Image (cartoon, rainbow, N blue to C red; front, side, top):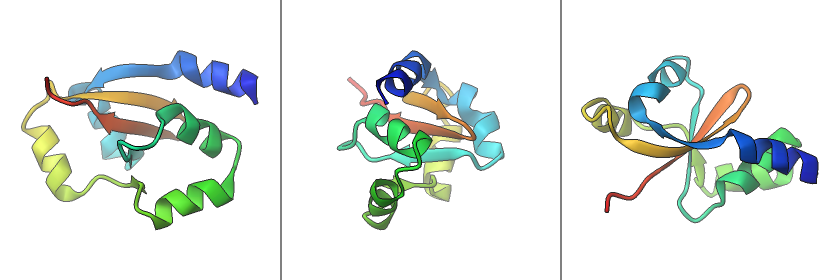
Length: 98
């Protein structure tokens, strides 16, 4: 499990919306709630931890972006996200504007 976490840590990065658009077009973006750790979610998905993932989905802590979110992000291509690729998905969390 620690090897998986280390591998995913290397895939964790910051991304502009512009870079994520192709993933949104193939419906692969999953929005992770702010209260969750992106790496914890990535490890759970990659290791098929169905109970945890299903709980987060049920609690709406893992969701597909809404049309409103996509519209907002498309109007600001420089919007930044923390992003983690867990094939075939890209997990994202909006970066706070400082």
